[in-house]
Image (tube, rainbow over all chains, first blue to last red; front, side):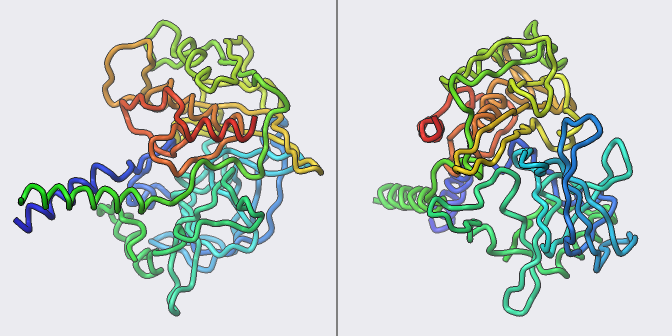
Amino acid sequence: MHRRSLSLITLLLLVALPLSASQFIEMPFDRVAREAKYVVRAEIGDTWAAWDDSHEVIYTYATIHVTRYFGETTGPDTLVVREVGGTVDGYTQEAIGFPAIRSGEKVVLMLSSWENGTDLRIHAYNQGKYLVRHRGGVEVLVQDPVKQGDERMGRDGRFDVQPLALEGGLTIDEFASMVEDSRAGNHHDGPIQRH
Amino acid sequence: MKIQRLLSLAITTIILVATAQPALAYVLLSPRRRWSSTPVTVRVYNVGNSTISDGSGGVNATVSAIRAWGIINSSTTSSAAVRGSAPATIMLNTNGGLCTGGCLAATLTGYYVSQTGDDRIYDADVYTNTAHQYYSSGESGCSAEYDINGIMVHEVGHVIGIGHSNVSGATMYPSVSACNAANRTIEADDRAARDDLY
């Protein structure tokens, strides 16, 4: 009887919870980690924005100072990442839902090359970006809850990053292990936030 | 008696799950911004998506679907999107170099920040990832395809200044699955967002 009740509750939870897919289709963690050219822990340094050559798209460029490469990859201490969106001469372009780049952030990024060049971009959109947070003396990774176009200011005018979104997270060691496993061909489809 | 207990347990579970959702409603893009007047003109480029077999590659279906917002003046155009210049244009035949991999469709919106806090949207264009399979209201049946009508109603929500909603069931909820045509209509939460802006 008890088991049947639990099964019923589980079924109800499965039916009631929203799907996790989005206008961006969620990709399994192992695929994102495996496809990425670099997986790095870094601090975002200077950022600047510029129109492309045809004056149609504003890109934000960021210098990122790498402190660790995950998996088998290594590379230079400094990389440049380019993402769609930014502000030039008071005009702002945003690609709604794409990852936002903010100077000074401590991050873990999965990076891949743009199709038409050697520049790097965050792989799989916001799935390739984590913020580094300290919790109880341990560094944990949480997915960035604030993407391009998201509400950053509450209606009362205060900074309003949804606090719940910053709970949980993987430790750096857990993340490193998952990346190594994934790049070795093992399957990891989450959960991304386990704590 | 056992059935009553089970029912009670089930109802309690549903209430707990429902109330566990964030108590937030629609979200406007930040900073708050809108077009200077309505109806908002949105054009659909007349080269459709090759995976949609409704006779127009989803163009006609999209033109009709996005009128669900009630403030959209939509039609086809033979001019491709020019980023940074109005009118808002939907491109079903190209990812614009932006929307790849797990991206189904992307809205690139542009605005000026005003000194008065009344920011105006200057342009918004929508691009479609042609690596995925789509279907439209002009077709019957669906097999692991994404509903272009619903996707574009959602994207046009971004075009007019609305972000992702926390309300499950809203068209602006950041969730879509294959063969789900629920986003073809806008819901109370979406209407509230629209009415807040316009």
